[in-house]
Amino acid sequence: MPKAHPWELAWREQRWAEASPPLSAVVDFADALKRESAKRVLDLGCGAGRHSIVLGKAGFQVVALDISETALKTLEARLKTASIDNVTLVLHEMWELPFVDDYFDGVICTNVLHHGRLAQIKQATKELHRVMEKGASAFVIALSMADFRKGNGRRLEKNTFVFTKGEERGIIHHFFSRKELESCFRKFETVSFEERLIPVEAGGNRAHFLVRLGKP
Image (cartoon, rainbow, N blue to C red; front, side, top):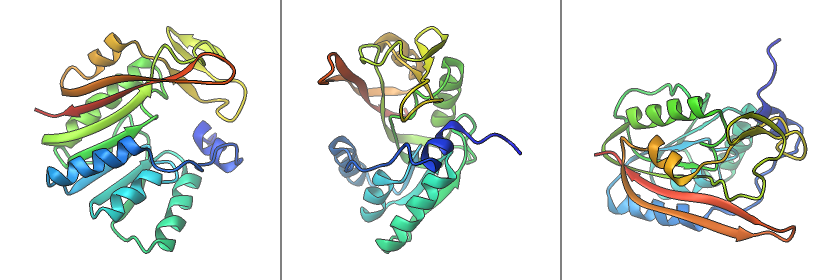
């Protein structure tokens, strides 16, 4: 029997839950997609779907992709409760997307892209570019090197660690420099690029890059 993916284990063992509300930045991006008349939107690494639900309620045809079957089952129940029928669930890894070229006119990928080795991440960004149609928009949130968790766990390669404790144990985290993340997105048009720091009680910051992209 194949070993379960670390994210599936985190959801299955109830170490990971999605209690926080949708991010305001994603809600703003959904509004921007409506102004752009986008129709087909991919939620890449959707988890239990807090953003898929927002997108579904906004009227988009949503594809919610995640590697965790348990997370997708949670989303399925949420969609049924909310009577939302325009969200399609897909169980898949992000390194090789099961979609035709130029299909989506909107993509969100929040706190997902950094979960891999750099070579895998570069492959995921190539796939992201491939499945977006010309003129499509994407919104990505990814970890910054300024995050207080950098160095936690076991080092796999430069700026890449697999956490060994806590709710995300067994899960890979790559911490980006701005230059490195910009390099991953070199085929895209960069609409905005912001680093956001949020202080934590233990000291240091949670640190993420918030990036809006277009496919020229």
